[in-house]
Length: 215
Length: 215
Image 1 (cartoon, rainbow over the protein chains, first blue to last red):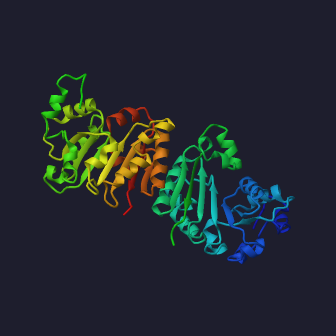
Image 2: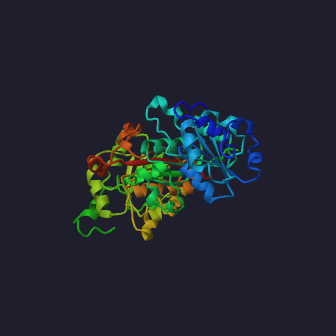
Image 3: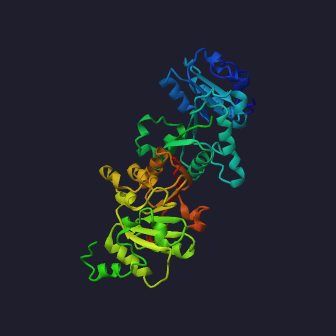
């Protein structure tokens, strides 16, 4: 984990083992032992600065959360936000999505959140989208039957792509909205940093939920 | 069938039995006998002036088409467009969607089109939407397993409603696009009268396909 531009950042990550798991692969199949309870585990892939998962962890003490971020420098910012709190149901890890099956065992994660992920607009970049079927198949390997995937974005083209990928892969899609903040689902919605900025301009947020229903 | 405002319209409808079926319920389970062949039957619910189904009937002589319209005066206009042609694979009928199961037997219709149908925007009018689950259940009664439903609209709220109704009713949805004319599906798209007018203004057309997969 390199943090060239932030002096002391690496040491700060190491100094907070109550939040940052530096060697997450060690816990594959054993996350319950780390949390020391049997609560369901929800993860967010691409948590950014962590406002979303931090809010959820405070709201729902009976759910365990793991925030995942591929950039160490961003993970460090997420840590700064929470490091003085006591949140035994939240861990943060650095990881690329391609490695997710090295970190979690089958059925270990009950719900996956992906919020405002990079649209990778060029066709040759499609595989990097968090909802590309190659990634969806990775999620199948860590979710139980009927495990959940919650997705929101402001990018209409990414949303259309994601919806079709999920349908083609035979996920059970539900609660689709093309304007989350004016929908019936808005009450329970927890905002991300990006969402606050973006939706204040009046643009719609697209959102869906899906269940993995392959045995 | 009353046509108060169009003198002679009723007589014109009756005078064209090669296109207009005045007593469609007689043919329930027997449409193949009327067409005198075993070709698949595709119907359009709410055909309006019929440009869409008329174009399809000319393009695809090996498919039988039935255009359905609830307004006699509009049916009459659709007839005027085709009456001097020879199209043995096209019939037109007047019908309300609530009566569709009186007209077609189980499995008799292979594909249903619904294009730019009335959005009925008020909640208390929801049942009248062609994609309300009460209507979707009617379609289940006339389609075979994997029978198709093709839907397009310019109305975002109707599209969102329709997509969720189909998903909730466990139809297999595919090829969803939020901008049909700029999608990969646009090549095969046959335009309706309304679509020509509307899309010339640059607004997007929403479109989806679905298969009925209840046994």
